[in-house]
Amino acid sequence: MVNDRGSIKWSSLMLPEHVEQLKELLDKEKIEQEPILSEDAMEELNYQLFEAINQYKEVQITIYHNNYLQTKVGVVTALSVHNATIQFEEKNTDSSMLFLIKQIKRLHVMD
Figure (cartoon, rainbow, N blue to C red):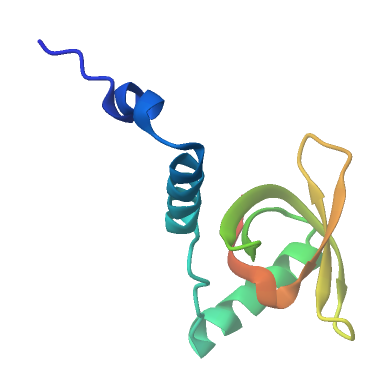
């Protein structure tokens, strides 16, 4: 069986500028497009959000931040309709985060 090292074997023949350009291209490929929610999906998300807040249930939340989807598990502790934000405490950490409601792309209430 041939042991192919991929691009590693060519890296010594590449100029630093080429390596930098290749890295930038790979980073651009990883960027995710922001999902657009339908009205039905937004309505369901709002329902689940209010259920999670009123019953203080743990949720799995997926947000779109810095061109990437991030999934976190925790509890929604506050909702500001005026600012369109939620306060979120991540599970197993002491960190509290503030998200814009429009950043939320998926929300699953844990049982």
